[in-house]
Amino acid sequence: MMRQVCLSIALLLMFLTGPVRAQFFLEEGKVTLTVAGGERSSGSMVLHNTSDEEVGVRAYWEDFRYVPPFDGNKEFSPAGILPGSASQWVSFTPQEFVLPPNGSQVIDYAVNAPADIKGGHYGVLFFERATPMIDSTGVALVTRLGCLFFVESKDAPRVADIKDVKAEGNDVLGSFVNQSDLVLIPKTTFYLLDAQGLTVHRGEGTNLYVAPGATGNWRIALPAELAPGTYSLVLNVDLGSGSVAVKEISLTQGANGLTIENLQ
Image (cartoon, rainbow, N blue to C red; front, side, top):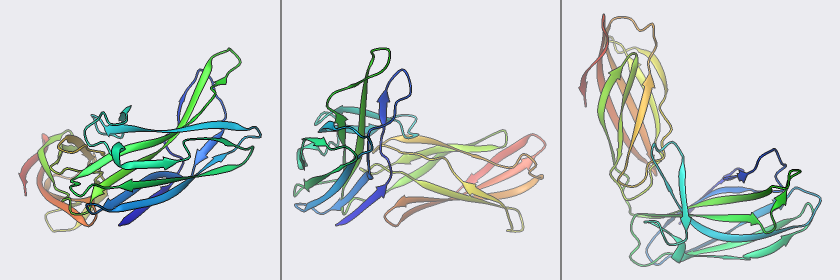
């Protein structure tokens, strides 16, 4: 089992008409569990109250999935509704509690993966103020924070392809096709080689959060002053867990701009 926790303030969702100071925060923004069939995983997280007043909190689970254009936007749904829900395997305690002024609460969780687990299963553990805050205009303000859970089968392959590459002005763009049963969050780096094999430009690609079987679009901006000639654009796409996709795109910069010659 591998447990990876990113320390960050997670998913602060505030529905309000004016500014208000957040009263609590999570140390954990994301829990990633890579599990074998039938394996039990457990852990804990800490919720803090940053205010001088007592705050009642309720904890509950919802499903989530990334949605087009796969730039990080999420759709939330009641537990057990969305495909790939992990809700039936996750338990947590306490589900209702009171945070003392400037105090904290440890929340324990456990994930019991079924013997036939396949691919990725996802959800978010939300913490919501039990009693909404009321602003100066009388509007109720609902504050909740959440920790994303990624529960993924240990043997699930990470497979993707780069397709539909084209030039648009001085940009190169195309599609990232997630061919796996997992959410893929590719980290793309690139470098541009001239005809002599020298690196003339390098950088990072578009941030994507692509649902299983879905397609996201990426774009790479090349220098506006790129000299006429032939080039090779090499993409290194880190799919996570040691899986990498590499693509080489042959380009020509001419009088009419960039032209895609070949993709391999």
